[in-house]
Amino acid sequence: MKKILLVEDDPDILESLKITLTLKGYQVSTLTDGQGVCEKVRTSRPDLVVMDVMMPAVDGYQACQALKSDERTKMVPVILLSARTQKTEVEMGFSAGADRYLSKPFMNDDLLDTIQSLLSKKK
Amino acid sequence: MTKILIIDDEPDIVESLEVMLTPRGYHVVTASSGGSGVGSAASEKPDIILLDVMMPGMDGFETCRRLKNSDETKNIPVLLLTALNQSDDKVKGLDAGADDFITKPFNDVELRARVRAFVRTKKLRDDLEESYRRLKELEQLRDSLTHMLVHDLKVPLTAVKGGVETVLDAMNKKENLLEPHRRLLANAKSGADKVLGLIQDILDASRMEENKLPLHKSPVDMAALARSCAAMVEPLRAQSQVALTINAGPSLPEINLDEALVGRVLVNLISNSLKFTPPGGTITVSLSYRPGEKQVECAVHDTGSGIPQEDLEKIFDKFFQRSDFQATRKGQGLGLAFCRLAVERHGGKIWAESENGKGSRFVMRFPLS
Image (cartoon, rainbow over all chains, first blue to last red; front, side, top):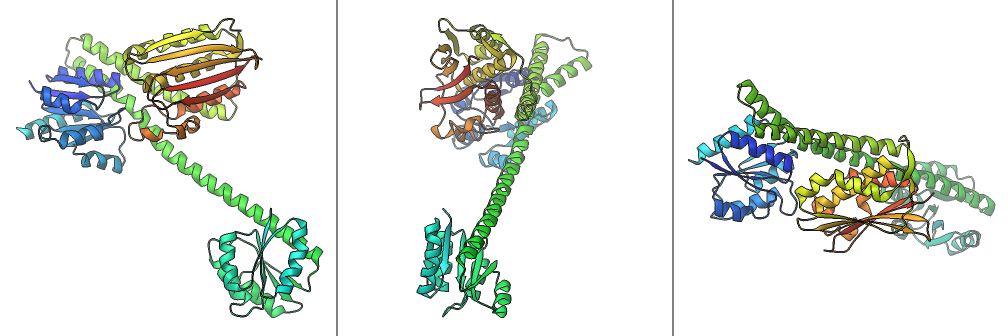
């Protein structure tokens, strides 16, 4: 069973995404802030990270950058989620090392397809 | 004080002009050549320039052309000082961009009247330019604001859309609906409520700005109101793992307020504190009566991250974003603007205090009558 780490500060979105991914057969662990993402990825070794951009304390850009600049975690694909879709904001996501950038609100299938394609590429 | 720059190479004329103007309260600065006059105009920013035509070196026409070609000085009215009946000079002067003429010998009453007229015109022009600049600024603000609001509205829709899709999917496949599906719908509802709340805030803020929101005042027990507000934010409070206490001082008088409106203000303030207070923190709502001022005070104090000093005033502006929360902004800027409008409509005051690292305190005071 593939493991996904879900990082999102909005409790409604967090729970709903967790349920949807769980129903699709993923094993989902969660965090509500970018703080601690690196440690969590090192210890629980998820196959993929789905992370919100706008979070208090440590935001998605920062957490993604930290993941991608650490040898131990940089192979883990990261999908950033944000309602901010201006060119500069998307570019910030990619320059932080994100593999994909999905704009909120998205279709479940968009997220699921993106996850699947990143996981199959990884193999 | 109106500042006049005199550019003339003849000391006698400069002096006679100074004698006419200085006692009348004008601040006079002088330059003895065209070149130094152009420099003085840029640095002194006078309200009006009196410029001699006949000067050695750079003459008055060339000086005038340079003044009118520079963005810094082009809006300052230039009055050319010419000898009587020099109509050639007048044409050349107009072509060089001069605004008017004064002929020598000067009649001091006429001179002052002209100066007054041009100072008036300049002020109108300056005012016009200032309001144009402000309008441009507002337009820009509105644009970035529209952009931001649209995006704020999209966020809660993530839970609505995703949840409904999953449930619909399950129903289409004739799967049994289970507890997770119920949770998805509950979150979708909560997301929809958030969108509605945002829209309500936008509508209220603009209606209140136009003074179209009528107040429905009645005697209100603030302590009871605070308790009912606390009950409304209870789910959010539990999620945030922050303690919330209400301290009501003794002999708190009832006060005439629009209970629903002030209730929304208080909910807004508490929710705001919840957003910025880490788990384990405390939020205290304190109510007290200030007999001296005959005011009831309601303060919301949290142990959160606090507010940078430079932002304390600005957070009540419409659509303000905290300087330290550019990318990770959680609240939208409308909540506090709404609070201020609502409190001010009651003749009250609202402000924020914060000490670095010690959380923030939002204080409202309402007059008793």
